[in-house]
Amino acid sequence: MAALLGGACVLLPAGYLAWRAGTVRSPQKLLVMGMGKFVSTCALLAIAMVLVKPSPLGFFAALVVAQLMYVLVPLAIGAKTRDQLQR
View 1: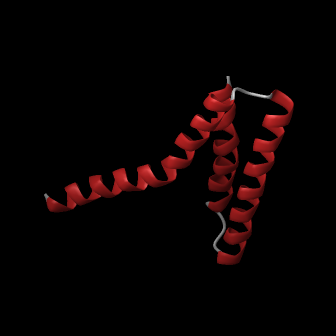
View 2: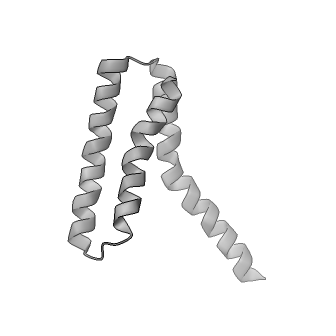
């Protein structure tokens, strides 16, 4: 339960940003939306810790894994793209 909650605290704001950013072309609006994502992620983390009181290990482990996806997915896509270009 704690891992699901930790992952949801990251994925919900990120999903909302991705959904909304598909139609926005202004860099200023994207920056504001990114700051809103950060604030909403922090707020969800605080709310979850205060109201639900999850197990810290599972909660923060899922949080770290979800945050690592921002680094690992582009690396994996980049490696796949490089392999396709070499053929």
